[in-house]
Image (cartoon, rainbow, N blue to C red):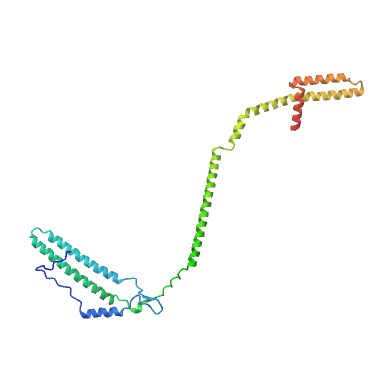
Length: 288
């Protein structure tokens, strides 16, 4: 709202009436009788209200609501006057100035009345009796200030904690490195199975192993007739010995010829030389 000019003609402005003297005295007496909520008690505490309701805030909101409603009403009145087209400009200007002056008077009177009502209500109907106030215990004394020695000790403790944290970080970094190395080893072991090289070597030597097995089988087959002939030779020697005991003993030449004949027969059956048969017998004896 714009302020009304001082030389406005045809508009009478009245000031808000002051409250009566008796009302002012009553308000002063009520305010003096009410103890302040934060007054100290003999025990060192404070006297506090037992109610969480704060009437001053509620009354202030009521007064503000009334003032805002008044301002909105005069704003709409100004808009209505400004929207009238069948009016001469000087008449519209004079009317708007009168509306502004009327708003100033009304808002001032409403503000003064609301303030007086708020004070009177707090001192009368909304006043808390002194006997209802509660004594609040005295607050704990403030902590003693920290000395220079204590501050130095705290700084030393903080430095030690920082060093421990740094060492722990370094240890964690080392552990992370070891974990990464182990992860790489596990990945490489999973990618290349450890039995792979052995399987490859066995596959490459499979042919040679089969050949060796076949040779061993053939040698065993050849040993069968050799053993049979050896048993026959032993039986013949035994028979010859018995005959020599009862009659004429064979000559050395006959024995040599018989031995050569048996060796030649064994070589013919097995296809091996005497040295080969002797080596095979020694190897089989060592294996057994």
